[in-house]
Length: 155
Figure 1 (tube, rainbow, N blue to C red):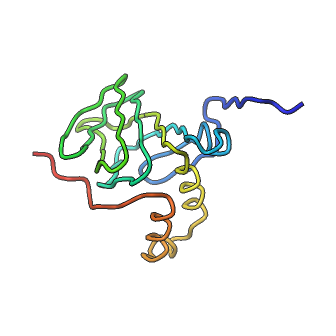
Figure 2 (cartoon, one colour; figure 1 turned 45 degrees about the horizontal axis):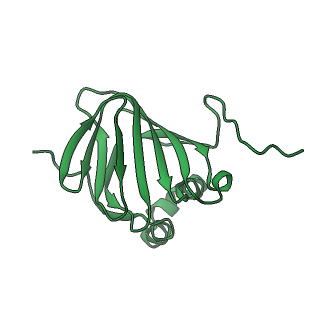
């Protein structure tokens, strides 16, 4: 009999170890019929996610460890462990570790699903693919990622 649930142990799930973070997919698009993706993102000291938005997707962040500074719709805020931040579609946002923070860990829900597919495609790309702006633009368009610019300066 096929299991009607999914159990992912600590450190389990498809994972992508980048220079700035190590992301684990805990609940995939396949698991939810496309409703959402749940990921655990382990942030490294140099983590910076530039200003971007999603036209059709919402993101929810729940901070588990460390302190993360978010720039959302023109406002800066610091999210300590236990903080939950929901960003609806169409809202520009960026984030970085707070000053003095060397690592962090957060859960991220991407709704509807899709970010896990984006990570899987990135994981198969070569350095040359990453440098191909047309390829990156097409991938960002496919997964509803509208890059706006770098992390804004904090006043």
